[in-house]
Amino acid sequence: MSTNRPALALRQGPAATRVLGVGSTQPDRIVTNDDLAASMDTNDQWIRERVGIVERRFAGEDERLVDMAVTAGAKALADAGTDPSEVDTVIVPNCTMPSPIPNAAAQVADRIGISAAGAFDLNAACAGFCYGLGVASDLIRAGSSGKVLVIGAEKLTDVVDPADRSTAIIFADGAGAALVGPSDEPGIGPVVWGSAGESVDMIYMREHRYIYQEGQSVFRWATTQMAPVAIRAVEAAGLELSDVDVLIPHQANLRIVEAIAKRLRAKGARDDLVVADDIRYSGNTSSASIPLALDHMRAAGTVKRGDIVLIVGFGAGLSYAGQVIVCP
Image (cartoon, rainbow, N blue to C red; front, side):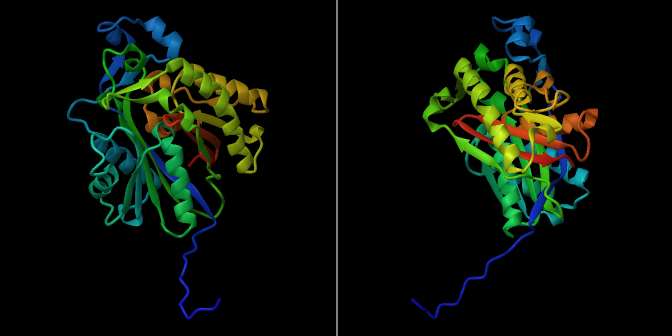
């Protein structure tokens, strides 16, 4: 059926995107396992053997999620050599804002100096950064955005019961950011994501105040389900597991990280695959954990520019996502 309606115009963006720069921040306060043992029934050896954590960072009462996001985001822009005026979209994956209104992203954009940015928060819990990176890449490729700042930021100490040994030893605070922009060659592979909503009760907010998780159930789910997701992300990028230089899973538990790496090596990943273990000194920072680990590994020289990096996040929802990126 013909009509006389005018046709809608559509935008068309670049064919490819890449990460232009990264940045991160953590609170100054270091909390050791011995510090925690002073207030609960635990000890250094038990924590190291159970989750692999040696120490973590806790924010003070005057340090907000937004503050950490601003610092990490500004560092990512500086790393990329990009002026705030060049950025038109800010995404802040998080699950610990004290209130859903106002969102973090608009406040962060304003404080960094990004004028009139499209700004929104994204809650996929510990998978949030991978979700945000996938959305950012697709926004640019669709022509909706030019450059997108993605900042995973969490203040988990606001939602952890300090008397709950199962969570208080794990979660910590911090922020990690990545600036995403157009590229002549693909630097961010297709996102592979999904959810297992039937397992929503494994991780949730107890009494709308404190985070709760069934640790053993989450462990079994992650160690069996995440390696196949990682393999799918590599295949979606048109690569082989042997092409991957670095693996950065969400830093939930060192035993989970090592189990995923073991499964990938059994399927063809190289023996010299570099595997992130940032959880040892950062704890579980949810949506901040992957960019934190990437930034720390670059600073340590264990990851270098041009490396093929496989990232995969997983957490409450249950939600998961992963993609292959080229290290900036």
